[in-house]
Length: 185
Image (cartoon, rainbow, N blue to C red):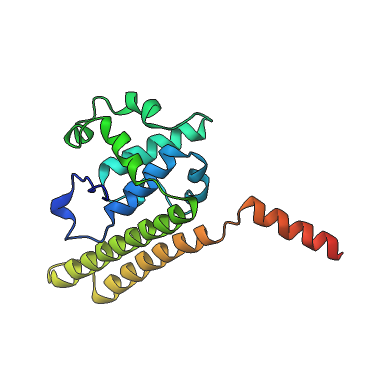
């Protein structure tokens, strides 16, 4: 029987695109095997998580791993003992519960891509809401052209962030390419 996802943002789930189960699977996988962090970190940062608790958990994981420390439910426990949001989910025991969602590195990468896509969709909703609000306000100091320019800039910035992420090449891949080029030379 598959564990039931836990979330403190149930009331918002129908409003904005998200996939809480993917978030739990990625976090649980990292907590079980920190190596997975390297596989998913090119797609994720704390802000990409819909659930604010997942945002905090990923941030703490990122800090620990960045310092060369182990990130697991035990090492994260002190970070979250007094966190009110996590208390609603069962306190530090939630960190243990989400490890039940852990999966393979390959699946974690796919789930990270889903989380990233949901984040992009949420950003698109925000951009369109802003454009709609500005366009609906007849007394605004922005002209229609200014609204279009602002919306285009926001969309361009969002697209650029995605292109920047795609420009990263894993060290392994870069090394293989370099070795192959050296052999051909």
